Length: 305
Ligand SMILES: [Zn+2]
Image (cartoon, rainbow, N blue to C red; front, side):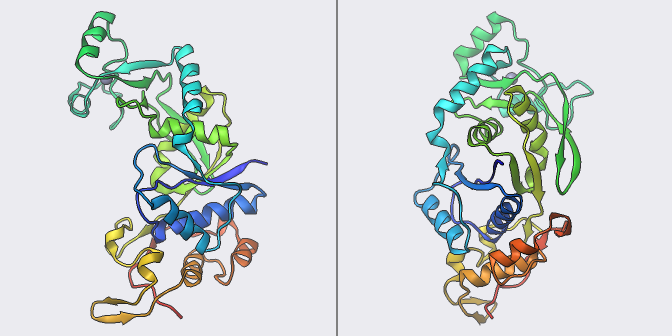
């Protein structure tokens, strides 16, 4: 059996929405006999101390993982290998477009909104050389499909756009979709549980996995936690991290006691329709088919009991 994983970006403390997704990833993995890995997605941005704080908070709510957390920045050889394979197969091309070039490019009628219009796909070599002198190129995938279907444990069959998406950004950093696929393949991850805001990226990643002879993982895109305004929960929504909740707080003139990690886990598990007493009890009761399909709205301050 393979692995499930939780893969936070070390950009700050985890909030309740992140912790709830981490609990779900753990429950999906452990309930199917899989191992569970933590991966630090630090290619993009890493704030000093954030990784340590995240690992500490995940442990505080009782999560355990196999081995040590792995960082993407320690995997450059893996990305280089995968890049060589794509290049050797003629599946990469240089793109010199700015964001503005892409938004202003003429579009063929069948190009879906948000998809790369293919401007640089067949640039004549002389033009390519000229553009190289102006700005560094990103590398895009020469995709031969326009859509791809994945199977999701909560959403069923999901078909989404696959365009010539970026593989390596023009600053040389592996792009998110590419890094995720390489990481999962190298780590033996065959189950991906994450927020449903990422569902639309699954077809691109699954398609890329097939090009790299990697197994397409089992997906479960889980509902997010929203604030009282129905927006995705964020740090500015108040006391939403274990750190915030660990001291007494005053909200709208009312004083609230500190809330510890055990209580946070209990509230999060109960929001999933699971017994909150312990992770073991939640695991025993866990049934993906019975999970809520709607976002969980956090519209009042979390309190102790
Ligand atoms: Zn381009």
